[in-house]
Image 1: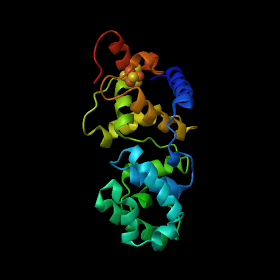
Image 2: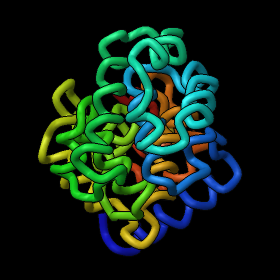
Image 3: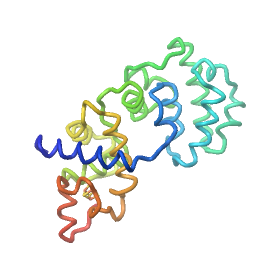
Length: 222
Ligand code: SF4
């Protein structure tokens, strides 16, 4: 994508997102601990289910130190409605690790973040971007799907872990506004550029989207 198309993409995405953003509570903070807790809870879980549990978590455990003091059975009480019992054990161990290995702080470095129990590459990148403002691409099903459609590259099951898609998303990123860019793409994927039946006719990125242009002429996007 050339520079002028990229400028257009950023401008239109941000304009769209300003009036369509999904107001989740874990987005209203740059506190790294809160962002981390939110992202761990969101793993393989719908945002609507996470919201009440997130609220309870940050109320009962407002800091890594408080989470580090929590017992496993206390966490089970708060988190059990979300299922995934292995995640409760990882959250418990994560609290202890934050206190014991990082003096109660959330690290900034990707490798250190990923060394925490329950923290995947995606979660580490999300903390870097949403809490610390680092210009890192986020590869999830939504962002990968949009990048593939924008640039006319087929998306497969492995795309979320592929270097090619990481490079593609890095090339699209607005490095001056990484939070807005990543939140905007995630929301566009959830609300407009959906997996089935993307709504290209109302999409703010149609003009610079390879597949959207083809779709507009009658072909079905994948
Ligand atoms: Fe997705 Fe269509 Fe928008 Fe392209 S134009 S990003 S395929 S909704």
